Each structure stands twice: as C-alpha cells, then as structure tokens.
Length: 455
Image 1 (cartoon, one colour):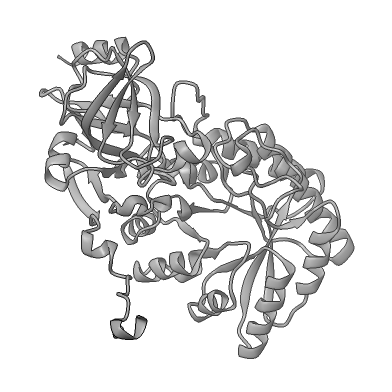
Image 2 (image 1 turned 45 degrees about the vertical axis):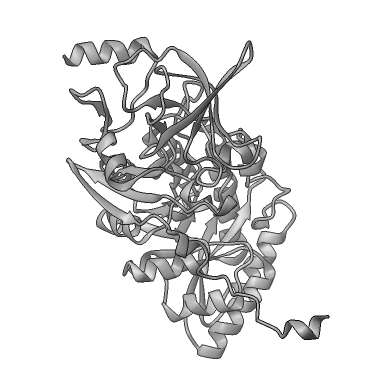
C-alpha cells in the first residue's frame, strides 16, 4: 500500500513536508493526525503546525555549531509566528528568542521564557517598550539607530541599571530575494551603515558607558535566501570591522550575530539548502578570519524564523463555490483567503496545495484557488492542480507557518483562524478561533443624543 501511495504522490508531483503522509482513507496526515479529522474538530480555515519538524530544524541548527565546537545561540525569530505555545516549544529546545515589539515581549513573558535569552529588535522601539525591556531584565537590546541609543542611555542612567546591546549594522550586501524582504543593503530603514562611518559613531557613543555593555554587532541581510554567498560576504564585512575596532579602540567583540533569512521550499521552483549549509558557510568565514587576524573566536548568534516554522505550518480550507470561465480558468473558492494569508496579494508569494481529503484521486484539475474576501486580488494560488473539486473538499495549502497568522487581519470582519499543534498522533488547540464577539470587542457604540436637538 505504501508503494502505491508514493507512486501516486510522485505522479501528481506532490511534495510532502516533515511528518506529512497519507493514511488508508486517502487523507493527508500531519504529525500522524488525519487532516480531515482536524478540520471536522476545529473548523476551517485552520493553521496546523508539525511540531516535530520545528524541533528537528532547531536541533539541526544547534548541532551544526556543536559539531564545530563553536559557542552559539540559536534565537527563534518569532515575528514569523508568535504565540505562547510556540515560545514554550522554543524554550523546550533551549533556543533563544528574537522579539520585535512590546507585544511579542509581553507574550514571551507570559510564556515564562528565560529573560536572559530574549533579544529585542526593531527600528523604532518606543520609550515605553525599552522601559519594559529593562523591567524584565532581558538579555540584549539590538540597537538600531541614534535616537534609540539616547533612549537606552537615558533609561540605564536614570535607573543605574546595566543592559547588554548589539549594534545592528547594514553591511552593504544585496541578497537575492524580493525587494520587500531585503534588509542588508545600504539603502535600508534598519541599522547603522558600515561604510559611511555610522557604525563607528554608534559604537563610540556606547563604548565605555558605565551601564551599557556592547556585545558586538548584528546584521540581517534579508529573508528567503537560497545562496550562501551573501551570508559569507556579510560575515566577512562584520569580521573586518571587528578587527578594525580592536586595532583602533582595543575592543574585542564577544558576540557576532549574523541574523537569519534561510530559505525554504514553497514550490518546486525553490531550491533551499539544508540548514547546516548556511551555518557552515558562516562558521568557515569566522574561523578563517579569526585565525588570519589572531582574533578571539566570538560567540555566534543566528536568528532562524521562517526556516523553523515556515514549512512546519499547513493551512486547511474547505471549498465552496466553483466558477469556470470557459477558455480561461476555473476558480475554486475556499473559506479563507487574504485575511488569513496576505502574502500572495501583498507581494506575489507562491504556494503549493493538495486536496487533503482526496489525496489518492488524480490531481489533474487545473484551478485557481480563490479566497472569499471582497478583492479581485484575493487568490491564494493561481493555476494549480487539485482533485476534481466538489463542495466541502478539504484543501491543504503547504508552508503557511511563517508570516501568515502574524500578518492576518479581520478584513471583511472575518475572524482569525484557530491554530493547532500536532505531534506523535496528538493534537492540541493553541490559539482558539476568533468569534463574532471578538470581532466587535473593541468597538464603542455611538453615544445616544437627543434627536430633537439635531433638527
């Protein structure tokens, strides 16, 4: 039977992720749980996470450093998907945590994440957010601009409280990815430029401060990157600056944070490398340059986000109406869309999908999966192949674990979906589906006035 299933999956060009498989009912399973059962239990749209895959990826990153004998921190870049439960899993895997707002920090506190392993990012942190970081005595603030330096100094001096910082820098590296998710080039809203002297000026403002400890530098060159060249160039640029600071200021950086951005496979067009390949390229550069310049080996930090949760997440939808435009296309509408996954409409992100309730049926019907939002651009996938569609089919869209729930909205007053974790045949609700009452919970009715006074 297994050979029969694999033959059909290959015939229809299906690619399964992590623990996904097909059971004897012909249904897609995730974490050994039937996807149709999940849809029946929790409703749709439903975001399902394969937690075993998350753990596998986390371990792979950590093991690569361990094998090389390099002290490191692997920080989950939680903007990809933030929740108490995923923070708890990250804590189980002994990861650090990258947060970018007071809200993400508050969630981490609610999850009782170790404060010393929380790194606070962001290009416009408010005074209140920074105060909150000091209140919680987090491990590190990644300083992004000169205004933030002033705020951090003000708070630390007023409280006489110590704080570790990293300086975020832009190394002038252009990564091969979408313009919206490229962040390491000179023209970026993030960080201090390495080439025009801004990074040096930022360092000097904080160097020898009585309460602030500069750990080193941080860079992040973009997201969904498949090649290692950009990571190598970024590592070289930062190492060269670290050597320069030692010569000029007798300062040795104890930490080098090279960010994340490691790509995943959304469709057959994507050719990602194993997580170890990106890390090994960074390690080779750092080891080579430390030997060349007799520089103490820094602790290396990285920040995988999408590569931990992206292909661990699958969204389940239920089909509704079908519309065929003769000679053009067939639309199959599902009960979600751009409200739970804005990425296709926002910047043309591509996904793959299967008929999760009909895995053994020929996936030979060419369709466009349309969302239910009142926008012509609400199309999740154009021109994909599914089993012959009928109302009530369960459709699985793969690799929706990163930047979908985080970017979800209540457009058209649609509720945000539920989120479920699956592992070893068990499933657990970790974010409940929003209700109609949730949709209006912040609304304030118009104050009633004496209508006669309006005449």
